[in-house]
Length: 577
Figure 1 (cartoon, rainbow, N blue to C red):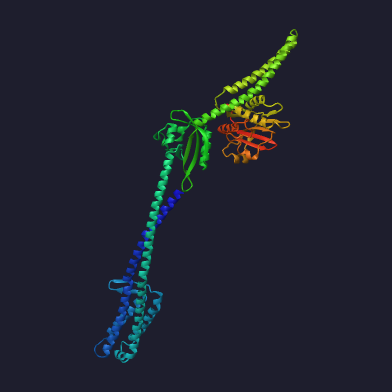
Figure 2 (figure 1 turned 45 degrees about the vertical axis):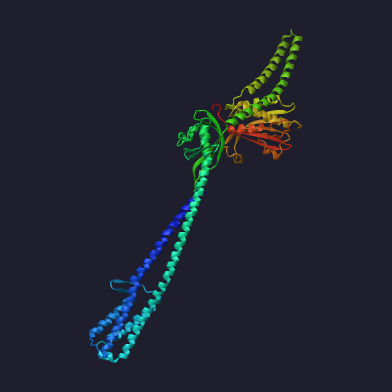
């Protein structure tokens, strides 16, 4: 918007500057042309008519002087005068005028056509009469009354033309001051408008400069790390928070590409999708791991938005980064706390199973004591004891592995094996009478995840389902792993999921369901549908965060009285990756 206003301001100034220059040029050009026309055409025209009238009068006077005996004239004198009058009239009628060295062609106005034709006709009658009688001057003198009529007619016609031309000049001269004043007034108004525009432009530029200074100061002193790059990912600006976060000085990164921050923790496909999204004009928002100057990794929450010019074209990108190190540490603590809670539930279930195992061992040992000589019975009882011990040892091994593994390193894992183990561990602490079934695909699917974290999330989801079906007749919980092909509806719900195939993990139950008004809040921190003392409200929020970090999504669908289903969608990988 600012760029468009600035463009309009420049265009307006150009228009007014041009008008301010052109109007005076037109004004003075018009004045010059009017003066030139007046000197080169109108004055010679008036002079030519005056000359015609003088020639007619001189011819008339010469004849009268001849009649009165004061002048002796020859036939050649009369012929010369007649030809001169004839030439003057012809030149005026054709528009050719001359005054001394000044001559030109004058276009006759429509309203002078009648006077000009009448003048020509009168002069032609006069000259025709004189030429007809030039050989008999005495007869010409005797017909004084006749030739006086011709002369008077010619003089009157010339006088009428002269009067009409003078009237035209008078009207033209009367209009010129008005037209000049109008043009001058327009020029003054445009000059005032231009001055006002310049004043407003200065005020607008001052306001825009002040606003830009505030924005620049806000970016510079923002607590978030700010980076501005061009469309080729070349860094053009970083603020002080960026230097504090990464350890780089401005001079070390300006002009360098953003790849200087690449930690190698994200794949090339990750950055390809990033550039596709921001290149289409969308805002990209996600967590990633960058590298500091000292080589250490720094988890950040980054938002990247395009910067557009007045033509709606992307010219730059602005990225803001929030240091997630403290949040990661807090999340790690919550993860451990949640894991201990889960471990406590598992320990309760294992204690029950372990007690059953001890009962089985003790019972078989007592039977052995009764018939120690029966070798076949001894071997049978020993085999049962070994089987019970193996099951107990397996449960203990799973629990120890779950509790001891504190690292969150990501690696390709088998979903069938991981989900099967999670279901076995969850069944240890589940209520009696609840059926936990599984359905896995024939061809195993692999995803990049932390195995213990995946098991913890699944155990938490299964325990929630077990809790939801505790008062239901014929309660059941089903865990399904399947291959999912994206649909148009799925892509519409999750625009960030760009792959066409995903691994889908479903945890479904026939419990009492979740009210519709609470479904939108189900993944919020500390939100729980359980009664006070039965839930912390951290399990689902942590599951949502962990699944998002590995590039997946989690959805929930529920109907009251019919049950709930959680679906986890994860990108698949090759087991060898």
